[in-house]
Amino acid sequence: MRGSNQSSVSEFLLLGLSRQPQQQQQLLFLLFLIMYLATVLGNLLIILAIGTDSRLHTPMYFFLSNLSFVDVCFSSTIVPKVLAIHILGSQAISFSGCLTQLYFLCVLAVMDNFLLAVMAYDRYVAICHPLHYTTKMTHQLCALLVVGSWVVSSMNALLHTLLMARLSFCADNIIPHFFCDPPPLVKLSCSYTHLNELMILFVGGLLLISPFVCILVSYVLITCAILRVSSTRGRWKAFSTCSSHLAVVSLFYGTIISLYFNPSSSSHSAGSDMAAAMMYTVVTPMLNPFIYSLRNKDMKGALRKMLSM
Image (tube, rainbow, N blue to C red; front, side, top):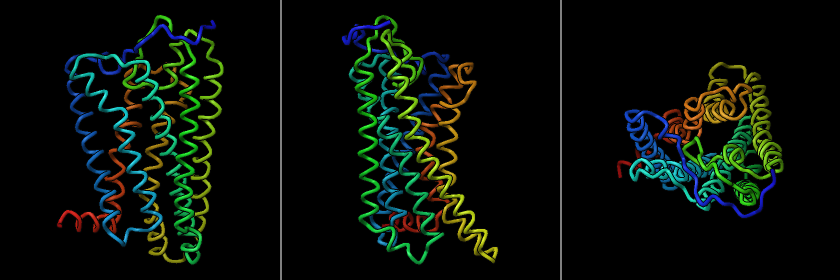
């Protein structure tokens, strides 16, 4: 039914962790805390290592430092609230607080998406057009790609936030999740939500699928270029330059597909949905620094140099 623009709900209740048994709640709290600290520390070390080592002042590492910054912000949008709920014993989040969290989640999730696509294009140019890499991947183009990604991500987030703000929430204010995700919020509304659902499906899908297609095309071309290399050593060297990025892409899109695009998701338990969301929002940002540092000699060298200062 249609409702007025004024919402009668002043706050929501995030019941993601509280639905678990007490012992599991304590274990999940500890897991969230450890993973959040590892995410912040690991990604900040990546940013500092890239910033202090002149050998890493290249487009690939410029994009990686931006990805690390986005991952820190992404986890910081969700995890501190989860920890506060457990410590304070209050599951409430204000209506404005929920919309604020929703806005930053939309911005940062799309930024992750765009940065992975930009990094795939960077690897494509490096492997398929190595002689023209410096002329193609200029500082101006790199800055334009990152700034453009921020602008599009912010506009998309503003659209979804404004559409959510116009909805009415009459009685039910319980979100069976640990953060303010658009689909559960739309389900709670007593307003006409067709426009919101359409925008989530169309705009959200477009901003997710377009970068994914860009990544797929880049890696198809990269694979074709690698297969044309005659020596096995040369093939392995070319593949190793993009293996870390490929691992991060697989982890990122694998968790998103399992959470939002699984046709049987409606029959999933709340626990399995929360586990998939935890992988996407907390585990992936934590693992990114380890994937890039453990599989990258230049990064490992920069980290050792910085930590030995």
